[in-house]
Length: 85
Image (cartoon, rainbow, N blue to C red; front, side):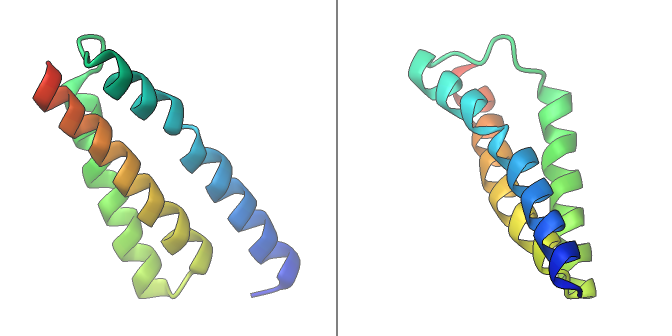
């Protein structure tokens, strides 16, 4: 993979992944996930897991890195939704 393409992929992955951090922080600080959509985050966990598998199969470092971190973050929100309702 060309260096510029790799850098673009890593930057895009970082931005979309880091966007979940404020939601994770909010759910756990407030101990409330009332405004979080269970179907949305369940689908997001599944979709992110599938993107991770795809990235692994393709050997695509940006996809693997972004989706590993994203899976942890969206799973944390989903877990918070189930725990704090």
